[in-house]
Amino acid sequence: MSIRFGILLIPSPSFTARAYRARQLICGQYGSWAAEMHMLHLTVAGFFQCSEAALAEVEAGLQAAAEKSRQREPRFSLHHQGVTGASGNIFLDLSGPPRPEALHKLHGDVVDMVRRVSGAVLEMEHVEGDYSPHVTMMQYAKLPSAVMADALEFAQGVVDDLAVPESANAWRLLLVRFQSQAAEEDWNGGRWAADLSWEIVSSYPL
Image (cartoon, rainbow, N blue to C red; front, side, top):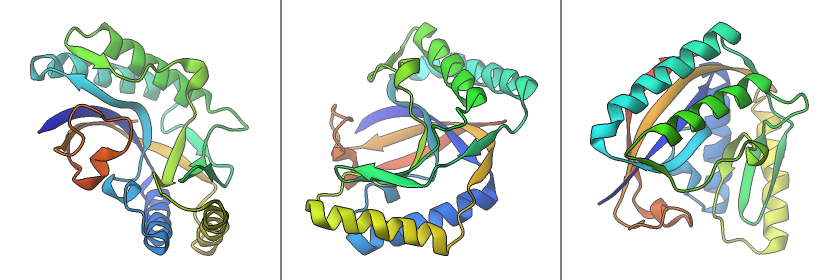
C-alpha cells in the first residue's frame, strides 16, 4: 500500500454542499470518477511523503499556520470565476480577480513549513507563482475534444442551475492521509483513482 499526505482547505459548508452535488452530476454524466474519489476541497499542498514520526511536527506547524491565518483574516473570502478547464479536467477557478491574498499567504506558510520538516518531502514543487487555487469538478477524463467542450458547457449549466455561490469562506484546514495500491509510487498521473481511500488526521479552524 502506497501512502501520501495532503493539506486541504475546506470551504464553508453551504458552498461545499452545492459544489459537491454539482461535481456528482458532472462526473456521473461523463463517467469520470477520479474527482469523486476526493472530498470537495482546495489543495494547499498536494500528495507528499511524510514519515509517521514527522507527523506531529507537521500538525504543530499546521496549527500555527491556521492560527496565523485567523489573526490576519478569520474565515477569509474566496471567489470563483466560473467553470473552466481543458485536457479532461474541469474546475471552479478561484485564482481571481481579485487575487485571494489571504489564501496565497496561507499556502506560502504551509509549503514553507512542510519543506522545513525532516521526514516530509513535497513531490511536486510548490512555487508561489505557480499556485492556482481551484475546486476540481472533473479530473483525468479521457474525452474526445468535442465531448470535452460539451462537458464544459454542461458543467457551467449545472453550476448555474444548482446556484453554486460565487463566493465562500475558508472554513477548515485539514491534514489528510491517502492510501492507494494502484498508485504504487507514482501519484502524479491519476493511477490512484482506481482505489483511493483517505482519512482526516487533523483539522484546524480558519
